[in-house]
Image (cartoon, rainbow over all chains, first blue to last red; front, side, top):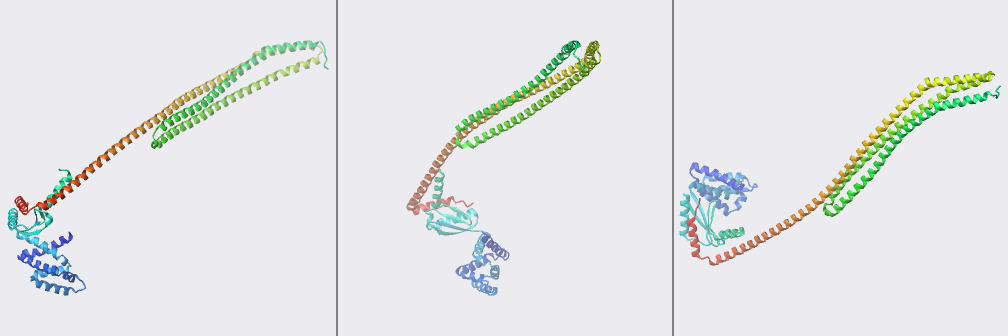
Length: 182
Length: 320
């Protein structure tokens, strides 16, 4: 929890700069790319957090990563601060927090649809339209397969979960049976 | 020189006359008075002693009755206790001990009262004996003084007869003078003295009567006290029995209550277990039912069913 709060604070700082220079969308993609590099090469975290290496050496390494990811000077400086403050280990959380903030800022909603089997585009389109109509925001819908749901689907919109799966209906039925409703 | 002649006849006659006169007018009244005094004073003392004895016997009797009553109360209480439950024995023992303490306390009070009463009566007896002794002592001194009054006259009469051949006339004359002297003394001095002594005796008698009255009052007071102690004894006995009875009833009531609670608790336990069993059965049924439903759905849910479900859910979808 504390970890998420700290990550959110870093993300807030960066997006505040982006709001001023109107590059917040750009910073989002750059931060995502840098995070993808770190995700692909986890040893980078160890190297950048290792106090045995000089800070200059570590910053030099970070500069190369940022350059490879095509990061602007602002994002690079942001990453340097993370290394200096040893907040680099939260990079993945900071990226997630920033994406969320950016979506809110841009009026976008990330919608994850889960079902036991792939869903037709027509139904996904219906879901997207319905949510856009309900929230007045652009819905970016993605799909995840979850066979344990048996049937139906689960829609995740940020922290909101709309559960219409057969599995959950069975659980509810079980609870009612346990309560003696039947 | 002492000679025996005809004058001895006059001497003898004079002696008997004097003896008669003294016996008639002095000794008899005085002895009668003394007897009366003795009767009155000693009677009072005897009466006081009798009262003391009565009080003492009363105390002994009372003590005996106290013990008997206490014993009887304890026995009855013991019978009641034996009927009570064993687990309540400690409470009963406490009640019995309390009663015993009360009895012991009462016994001590009675013993103390007894000692006090005996002490008082002994003091009274001492006072009586002292008073009597003083009065007897006064009487002894007066008798001796009286004897001394008569001695010089006899000696004087004997000496004159020896010197004078016509002493017989002198002796007669002397006797007459003595008789006159006795009469005068009787009327003036002895009479006054006996009157005064009579007054003293009267006073002594009154004092003795007063003392006796006091002793009677004391005895009455003590009897009243004994009567009160008697009622106290009855009260203690009643109290012991009432407590024992109340304890017995309470024990039975508690036993009944315990049994009732036990039964109630057993009923509750049974009810709870039945309820729990019902819940467990229902849970098992629910689990089995859901598991069976899951198997059916997994087997029977087709693509068209899934599409129908998704469409329906999408139509009902509400984000806010």
